[in-house]
Amino acid sequence: MKASDYIVSFLKDKGIKDIFGYQGTMIAHFVDSVCKVEGIENHMCYNEQGAAFAAVGLAKATGKTAVAYSTSGPGAINLLNGIADAYYDSTPVLFLTGQLNEYEYTGITELRQQGFQETDVVSIVKPVTKYAVHIKDVQDIKYELEKAFYYANEGRKGPVVLDIPMNVQREDFDEKTAKSFVPPKERVIINAEMVASRVIDAIEKAKRPLILLGNGIVKDSEFHRDIMKIVEKLNIPVITSLPGRHLLSYDHPLNFGYIGAAYGHRYANILAHKKCDLIVSIACSFCKRQTGGKSENFAKNAKIIRIDIDRDELLRKVHSDEIHYCCDGSTIAKAMLKVIKNKNIDKSDWLEVCKKVREPLVQFDNNSPEREPNRFVDAISDFADKDTVVCCDVGQHQLWMGQSYKVTGGQRLLFSGGHGAMGFALPASIGAYYENYKPTIAVCGDGAFQMNIQELQWLKRENLPVTVIVLNNESLGLIQQQQDDFFDGNHFGSTAEGGYDAPCFKSIGEAYGIKSYSASTLEEFENILKTADKNSPNLIEVHLDVKSKAYPKTYFGEEMYNQKPYINDELMEEILAY
Image 1 (cartoon, rainbow, N blue to C red):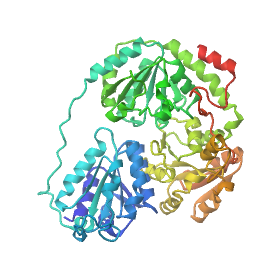
Image 2: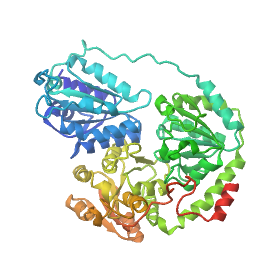
Image 3: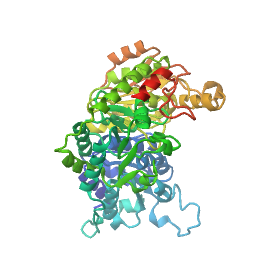
Image 4: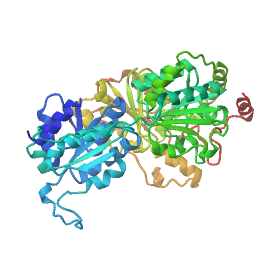
């Protein structure tokens, strides 16, 4: 059997149905094998970064391994943004890169380049992969594929890279004589029942406990379902990280928003920072974007318990006296379900306090004139179906979506979390479509959209039901906002006078042959959404004020609970007194 044929059969046996990439000389044997096999579809992007983000979007939507490929050199390097995104957000993706024929290598290690389009891919990607290897011998193919899949899904999930020379792809492969990968024996590092008992005991003793849920929980997974049973049985408030926003429906009675030191929900920040006496963090990195720059000042009156599978994340302490357990949160969740089975923990008084905190703050923000862009997000919420995957780019629009998008049912709201890559949303929404072949939505800013705008041709070519919504304030709005605060309003590189510009996106969409619209008012936008065909590609350009802001926001030097625009002193005193 030809080696590239074996690779494809292996992927098919692993349940891979869709593969994303861009054709090239050094990956051509693999692509040829993919396209000859029934049951696997090859989807061609127009820049390898688009393929990488499409695979990431699919993997984030499903929690399962996705696959992307490229040719060598510039093609492989174009995958790097998606590889890094997968690494920081614990996303299992297998990346395959073509490479120079093994016999063309000179053996001269000091040589800058071994041949045309040769690049040492493995050395470049190692810092942002769980496993990366250059395959020299065709008989190592089976071993390396099995090892790659194991590491992509073992422990904290993440990306793996196999760099495969042309000659290895086309050589004969004998599966019978090929060695297999034997996973290391699992070690029981911690007693799950003991951890569960200690956590539940702490919750029971606390007067004002919060549970913080993070991106390590895949929506609709068994882990997620178990967690929801726990919080509903305990009936205590839940906050999330921004990437964990979709774990609870917006109207769930225990959902008290997402925490963010700068742009988080005002009520989530107050409850976590000033009101609670215990935070149980599950599968959340608890980085400084959540706690603020001086994490030791965060929630000073609260005890913190952290459950995380990544030992290194737990070395980044929030409090010096925090309690943490390095273990699989899903195992602890199962044990917690057993512990709480016959318990009757009543935190109803605390839940009422949380509601009293939330209600006036939601009303204040909803009535703030500075929040006009958030009203467009409300309209997007109404447009989306109950199982829609919504992918969001990076910038002000990301914060508007985080603050105001109303997640319901089985919807997923996907972000480029740790990496924060502009250009994520469009290709990720394409990849996420292949989860269930239902319409998806990409929400972009005018700056981020131009990073991978070429993938509109992918939408047109495959007639994909992806609606692209470009919130266009003709600026890099988040940078402009920062420049207003710290650089005396010098908008270098962020507005027209500073050297930045944006095109007419409606015209570009039409040039790609996509049904395109333009709206300048909320009413116009709502009317477009009422008539747009969700089952076909759409591009909707929404014109916003160039001075649009993302609020609420914590300003430098302020505590994270005191966000701009400021609530009046009387209301703040009342809330802090509850």
